[in-house]
Length: 569
Image (cartoon, rainbow, N blue to C red; front, side, top):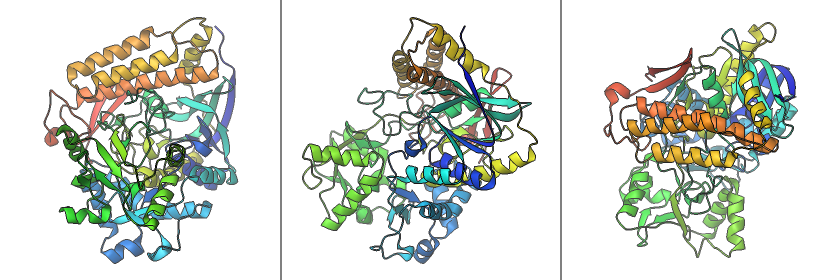
């Protein structure tokens, strides 16, 4: 059997994943260590959830919030109570909130524009009501934030190894020793030996069917396939919240998936939400109180998933975003915000191409695919230094579990913190350990290369989507999930993937990781015997069980068997 050629790299700190968290981790690690490598599946200039831009980031702006009577503790409490419903890593959300402005100012230092002359607020920030029950979400020029961060990574002297998909981890006597990945362009195995590793690969975004039926028609980047989570689980890292999934996913432009949702976010200030009878079901943000609501950020009833679904089920659909309101200044502000939010520039281009106008045409909205997204906070449990249960292995941003809706500030602050922790750990390690763990990936790739005929990765992808959607969504129960596990196990044992080039091989490795993530999800769903909001709905256990399950449900591999633990926040 012909094995792929191996290329070896070595460093003190290895950062896996070049999104917001990974870039910030690489920058800070580069400030503290002279030997840092950032490995990315794509090109970090356009990778991760902010690949095509992000127009908003929440944070604590003392000069603004204190003047409005909101303290740091108030904002943390708001996040814990109204967003996370108490199920959150409290130490980490406090750290994120407290240091968020520092990381925002880092973005400015790197070259991002975050201040505007038309703002009357201290600091000249454009702040909106979006996430929390106060005005603390910064709108800024974030379309090219990944290019800005990647440039800062290069200036810091960090070595970037792009187009390499890290898929397995190396261990030495129970301690992290590096990672191994597949070269998506050169077809080689890349062996990274390191004293400390920071994982920042993100979510498993391609587990479920999309409403359009197109595999890559996702709100979030479909290139994120849970590679880091699968790699960590295989070496014994404990995963939490993997059973949580937003069902359905967020609301977005029907047939053209992008960020934005109902009026609010990128669509403010002029947007309102309408039902099919042209009745306002989601007022402009500053009009919420006129509808008898106290602003509670993402938890405000007029913005809730339940309210919108109730309109559809009552025969009052479809649901529309109507952005025809407001002054010309409001319209200009909205277009500016949309142009900086994920795929927003493409969205505006499509509108122009087909003669669509916000003043004249409503945008129909519909629930998109289920997501293991920001509200779910699925991933490894981490301590106050972002370290997992394996010494020297850290997780940041969407890779880490237990911090719902930490999103951009979570990525930036945890990236920064994990880098400080990893650099300090690396300094205590003598020489770079000679770890092992590349055998499985090497064998997997060699077997595929050796085949002349077999199954395409596209068939495997659709099969995984069907299994996860059929057995882990609306008909969720223990018996359904067990059948889903049987199906995934059958696919894993019987599929004979074939690849004609490194690009196809990359997708084959993704299938391996998606199956791993799917199995973790189904096992956790079986173990959590309750229903919790719209994150977990079981037909056989329809009630919440706070007494037994107000916890992070942990799952890990130990000596070849699955072990579950409960962790109480």
